[in-house]
Image 1 (cartoon, protein in one colour):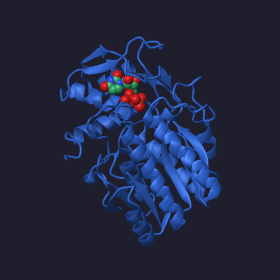
Image 2 (image 1 turned 60 degrees about the horizontal axis):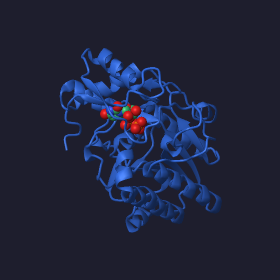
Image 3 (image 1 turned 30 degrees about the horizontal axis):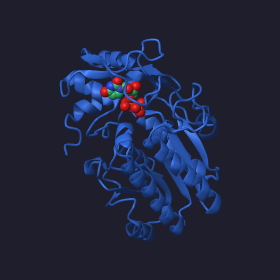
Length: 327
Ligand code: UDP
C-alpha cells in the first residue's frame, strides 16, 4: 500500500514526501519535472517521471503499485501567469487532474487529497475566511482549482471514493532539506531574501495604499510543515471513514508586506532594500483564514505560527542552498 504524491519534486510536494516517509508511509512520486527538481525527491520514495495527462502511464502506475491514497500537488500555481496564459492552467491543472481522476476511479483508488487554494474565494465578503463563503475566483489559477473541486464533488457522488480539498493560504518556510526554489520567483519571502543578498534588485512592494494599517497587503503565512501535517491528518481522517470535505489551512493571523520585511531584517540582521511599486492586479487587501474547521475535524493546530519562526526556517534553507537545487 502506497501513497501517490503527484508534484513530489515541487516545493510543497517534496515536503509531503519527506514527512510521509518519516511517518512510515510508502511513497510513489509522479512529477514531469517541468517546474520541479529531481533533487527535491526524497531518496526513500519511488520516482516516476511523467505527466498527469498521460493516461497510459497512469494505468501502468496504478497496475504496478497498490495506491491507497493520492495526494495531488502537481499544478501550475502563478496567478499572473494564469491571467496571461489561461490555456496552460486549464490544460495542466484541470485536464491533468481530470485524467488522473479517471485513471484513479478505473483503478479503484478510494481517497484523494487535493491541493487547493484560498484563491478559490476571490475577493472575500468578510475576514477571516470560512469554508462556507461563496467561491468566486477572479483569475484562471483560482478558477482551475475550483473547477477541480467541482469535478471532485460530482465524482464522489457518482463513484466510490472520497476526497479532502485543502485550501492553502500563503505556504512558506522550509524543512532542513526541502525548501522553495522557483524560477521565476514571484513569492514574497524568497524575493525578500533575493533583495537582501543582492541576488535580485531591491524588493518591489506592490502597493502602499491598501485598506490596511500600513497600506500594504495582509496575508496569512502558513508553514509548509504545518500544511503537510494537515495532509497527513486528512489521510487518517479518510481512512477512518471521514466524509468528503473542504478545509482552509492558515494560521488565522495576518502579516503585512512591511511586517514580513521587518521579520526578515530581525532574522538576518540586515536591511532589506525595497521600493514601493504599483499594485499587482488581483491582489486583495487582506486574506486571513479561519481554520476552526480543520482544528475541530482534523485536530489540526499549526505549530509554527510566528512569522519570525517561518522566516528563520526559510532563511536557513536559503543559506544552505544558495543556488536552490542547483539545476
Ligand atoms: N509581494 C510584493 N513583492 C513581491 C512579491 C509579493 O510586494 O516581490 C506582495 C504581494 O503583492 C502580496 C504578498 O506580497 O500582497 C504575498 O504575495 P505572494 O506572491 O507571496 O503570494 P500570494 O498572496 O499572491 O499567493
